[in-house]
Image (tube, rainbow, N blue to C red; front, side, top):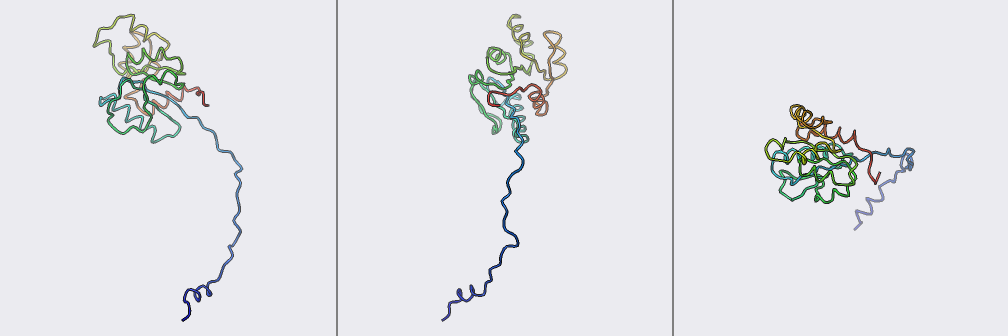
Length: 194
């Protein structure tokens, strides 16, 4: 009995490709780009309104623009409102971090002022904390009038901060992704790995 596979193979004709495959050498280099490193310093990234907006906006940045590399520096670990698609490190790591760092309250601002390595330091005045608690004027003065740049949460806060301390450089509503990216791009000077 004849082998049907052998007979079938006899009827197959080999066809030469129309043109040989050419190896194309790249003539252009890949354009270099900057990775914008920045960090947000918090006491804890919790289920609060501030925590919600930080996670939501940083995830939005990470999902939409590969050039940004945010980190959250926290003092105490807490359950977040969503899956973080960004790095979260202990606060002590900010001491050697060479990107832009943004503090989010008086306590983290005081810590940030003493960090030697961040290339630019900001204090995002999320809330006017001194209105709700008792603070020594010198303590507040050391933070608000230091070389740290201020970011107000809204225009009303900006007006109050300007009258009491100094004019905020930016106004940013609830860690708005586009404003945050703008702040980082305008102030980024490159890190050690650039």
